[in-house]
Image (cartoon, rainbow, N blue to C red):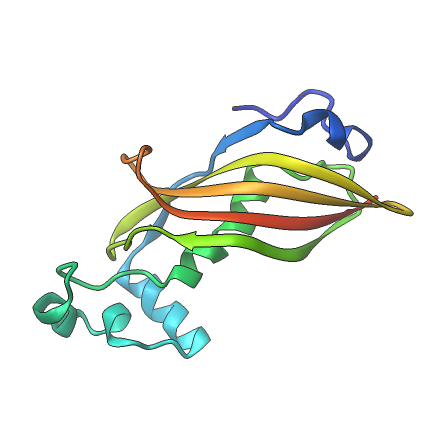
Length: 156
């Protein structure tokens, strides 16, 4: 999908329903998972203990953190041009309806598809943008691993 030709802060309402397409695949290898665990303190063995996960996990190895998947969304949105270039700033406003639908094995490449679902004026140069974000392991577009609704406050 492409960025609409007239995509500006003042025309955001016109683009509700637009599918911005899929991000570049992000490799969620063991190094990245381990680094995320170190940053967050979530070092549960299912994520970081490769040998134990191979022997005991129902997935045959380690899996990415759900929160790591969720953290891919803002970069995907900026890459895909969801937020207009004439915005002075965009602030993370939060997430709704987050669902982790399937485990993501270490070594997977994940893409995030983003669609603009709602735009709400908040007065004085502020617009709340709501997006539907669906993550897939590359090559399995019919099997989402994450669904999340995100909100960003666009500042004019």
